[in-house]
Amino acid sequence: MRKRSIQETGIRLSLAAVGLVLLQLANALALLTALGADPFHVFLQGLMRRTGSSYGILYMIASLILLAVLLFFRSRPQSGSLLCAFLGGWILEGFLRLFAGWIGEELIFPVRLLVLFACCLLQAFGIALLTQSDSGTLPMELFLRHLSVRLQKKTDLVILCCDAVLILAGMLLGGRFGIGTVLLVFLSGILTGHFMGAAAQVVKRATGNVSAV
Image (cartoon, rainbow, N blue to C red; front, side, top):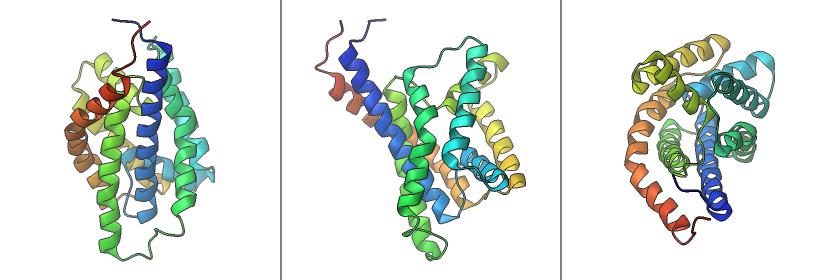
């Protein structure tokens, strides 16, 4: 495996940050529609309602716990995963405040549904770009991959089971499950696969003129 230059590493990390921003924009808009968010954010929403803490704090705590578990099993996270852990929640909270006066339950259902479809597109491309940057991914995704390896089970099966647990726990805590959750799990997952090629091209063009040290 070739060694990356500092410049290439910086470019890849920047692309990961763009992917994270797109992803958290999608999550914020989904939460504001009040039609259900993705399983992890259904869980966080429930925790927030029970504890009174902010998304920023809860997201960071949950992400750091996941990374700590990975470190315990000697799985070393990349810089992109640390970026997601420390900044992901605050980016989400910033978008929630920014769009709170524009998107909410008062909007008619068809408009909120259109917003959800836009969320699926944003989330899918954000995840694809984050993945293809190859500088680290979301702590939850990293944890699930590691868990599937340790359990010797298919990754898709592990993700499905964990999603079910997160949704159930989130609902018990007061989080909202809805059509948005279903769309973000299934439609966004399909779209992510389609966007992988385009995201790979973005990364290739951004790093194409950068030579390794």
